[in-house]
Amino acid sequence: MELHTFKDYHSMSHAASDSMLRAVMSKPDAVICLATGHTPCLTYRLWVEKILQKNINVSNCFFIGLDEWVGIRADKEGTCHHFLYNYIFHPLHVPESNLHLFNPMSKNLEEECVQMNEIIHSRNGIDMITLGIGMNGHLGFNEPGASLYNDAHVVKLDATTQTVGQKYFATVQSISRGITIGLRQIMQSKKIIVLANGFGKAHIIKQALEGKISTSLPASLLRNCHQATCYIDEEAATLLRK
Ligand code: GLP
Image (tube, rainbow, N blue to C red; front, side, top):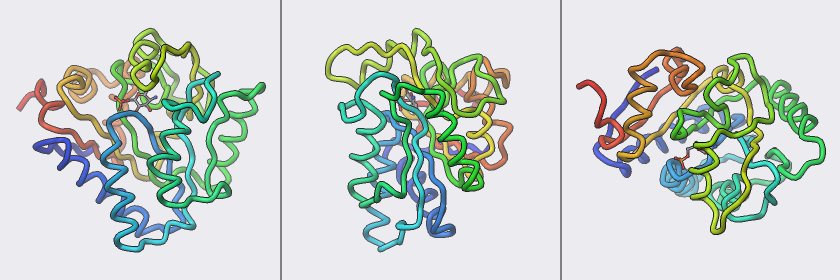
């Protein structure tokens, strides 16, 4: 994995959005998987702006959701659905036929996983994935201890994720389970962009980049991925060895 450190959140987001732009310019029918969360907000805003300004054709791209909170209506503010429509699908006018997200209210969540796996497989995998890092080192909802060999699956969220996840919602939610694509699908993605900013992420970034590479800290696994680039700001890099 390559590591790039930037002065601040803005310059980090600019660089990451440029990298995302190059990906859709070089592969106009790219399969794109996007994390939600606070970290990528500016990257996505800049990416969309640049696509529109430069008139880049993304009408043949296919978008898939990385993860979702189980049992919360998709249209509620705070869900991954709501985020992706707001930041990406509405501004880029992505038709429903060009996207697939997990249905968090499905009565058959296993079938949701099967469908997502089939879609990823039939499209020859993910061309570009943009990831954040959870406070416990998770990727998507691949929590500490997740298997390297997992495809899409339903997961019991750990205590940190349940607590931190409340920040996305206006009122307290019961968020005990998530649905996510698996570590295998993430690590097989052809281009991996991983983002982290702010002092709050400094500790987990140190562990992910300088600690043991292990499924007990899923983000550390990306160090074995030659196709991964990590973009962080100086605040997130504070604890790294110089
Ligand atoms: C969330 C999501 C992840 C996200 C991560 C970091 O719970 N499941 O996909 O990347 O945690 O979120 P944030 O960017 O808000 O720190």
